[in-house]
Each structure stands twice: as structure tokens, then as C-alpha cells.
Length: 408
Image 1 (tube, rainbow, N blue to C red):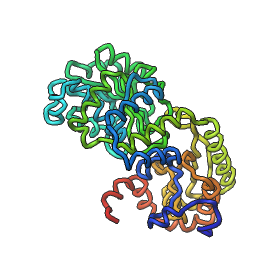
Image 2: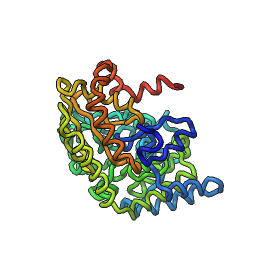
Image 3: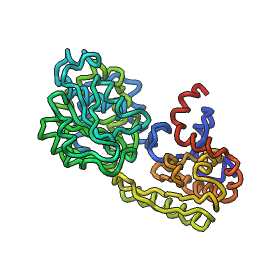
Image 4: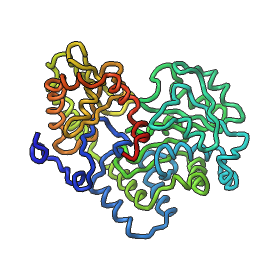
């Protein structure tokens, strides 16, 4: 493969900075930078940097845009969706009392628990439980890992419970959990507000419309903004969460450049031709599927996103006895390709890997097609030589291992 001319891809930034090239077919992953910003968003971000601005004034503007984007009464921007969880929980504990906000996390007071279904206590790069604990709150687990019952949630929502958290993510158990509408109904009957973690979701209006008090989104995943989190919802709870910037939120603050870029990204999202974007993603999926459909031991199937986002991925089932290597070994082999393909390998132990087209740059769909054929056919022998246990461990533990190995 001619690295410079075969595909119309601009690698100049990576090469000039000495950073490794890569093609992201894993989705909106924080470890890869979240998403790709457009020139419009990049210009808005850069334009703010050489200027002073009143942060509260910019946040007020952001609140107006968030309200239009989500249907919320108000909103603000913070460092990340994870920070948004912590601040929303803290706001439910303290209300608008600045002294109580300053007392966190050491002294949250008696009303300090957050009810969460056990199946929603996922790991998204860090534990959900830790985002709650950073506010000084205690996690009150509801049900078991595969089944939560209404009466168990009711029992958890006593006078010491400040909030209930509901997680919408492919990371969580997708069966046996209390449905969102029922979860909200039970919590509201006990006077407990519901926070929904929807960091990587397309649906920016439905969760609040269905009764959630606060919905939290990532600004740098599907929206394609700078690193940021969006906290949207009822005005009193949003104000209480924003108040936490005088306390634990200080370390989670967002700068003028990211506020400006996030505003531009949100406005762009409301003007986006979503059908055209989806059509291009579908074209890539169809091309990839056709390219590898006849390879021995390989079964590519298009599957919908498990949380209902309007997108599909290519799930590639691999029969190691026929294909010559396991899904984990092929996932590692894709990472050794030139340039590396970062695939979605979080469930390779089940015998498949996934390809997500939502973050492709110009020319990369064709590059991925050719790399798929190369690695899954001609590269099968090389993949078979990869230690299968090490490949599986890398797929499962790679995110943590990168921190253990740093600096590289």
C-alpha cells in the first residue's frame, strides 16, 4: 500500500506532529478524541482563544442553545458527560445552598444517596459509581445485574435518596431492567428527581419529553464539538448543578474556547442533513459487507444500534476453524495494519467484531474495504500467529493498559 497516494486522505497533521496514523471504525470513542469537528466548529473554537469573555455570559448563551436543542428549560456546559453526572448529583444534594456546595464531597448531609439499577452500573472508561461518589453521594443499588423490580426501586427511594440515575448506553444490560417511563413514574411518586446519562445518544429531546428531570449528553461525540458535556433539564436542578462550579465543579470547568465550539456544534446539529449523513454511512456498510461476504469463515451482518440511535454497524462473525484465526486475533491484526484500523472489539470473546462508519473521513471507506479483505484473507496466517490470549486481553483491557504503560 502506497501510504501517500493510494487513498485521498490527509495525514499531514499526524505526520508533522509525529503521531501515529489511524482509521477509526469503532465509533465515538473518547480514547480516540471523541469525534471529528467540522471547519465551522474548529473556527468557532479558535476564534474565542485570543479573546477575553465573561464565562457566565457565554454559559447563558449556551443555555439558550441547549434549550432549543433539547427542549430543556435550561442547560450548561461542563468538561464532559461524566462531569455532568457528578454535578447533577451534587446539585440534587445541595440545591441552591452555596455553603452545602462548598462542603462536598466531605459532608453531603443525610440526603445523599442515588438509586441506580445494578445492570446500569457500567464502566464507560471509568465506573458510573465513581462519578456518583465524586459528589460525596452513596450508591444505592437496585435489583440484581439482570433483573430489577419496581418494588426494589420503591424501597430504595427513601428520605435519604437525593436522586435516581438511569443510564442509556450499549454498555448496560439490555434486559430485565425497569423501563425508563416506569422508573421515572416511581421516582416522581417519591419526590425524587431522575438524571439520565445519555452521553452517546442521538435523541436529544425524547428523554426530557418522557419525564426525565436532567439529561446529560456528550458534546464531543455525535455532536462533533470540542471536549464537553451538556447538562440539560429543569431550571432549578440545572441551576443547582451549575452552582457546583464554586466547589467540586471547579476541577470540571470548561473554557471559553470549548463553550464557543460547543455552541457552534449544537447549532450545526440542528441544521444538519441527517438523512444524507445516514445515506453515506449506509453506503460504506454495504460496500464492506459485499467485499467480505464470500470469504471463508466470515459472516458480515448489518445490525442496528442497541439503544435506538439511527445508525447501523457491520457485525463480522468469525469462525476461527475456517477463517484461520479468532475474532480477537483479527482485531489485533487490524490494529497492526498500515494504517491501523481501530475496530469495535469490546465483545470479541463472543466471536465477532464490529465496524462503525460514523467517524469516517474522506477516502477512508474504500481504505477500510481493502484492509478488510487483506487482513481477513491474505492476513489470516499472520493473525493466527498472534497469541490468542494476549489478543483477547488487549481487547478487554486495552484502555486501562494504555494508562499503565504511559508515558510510552
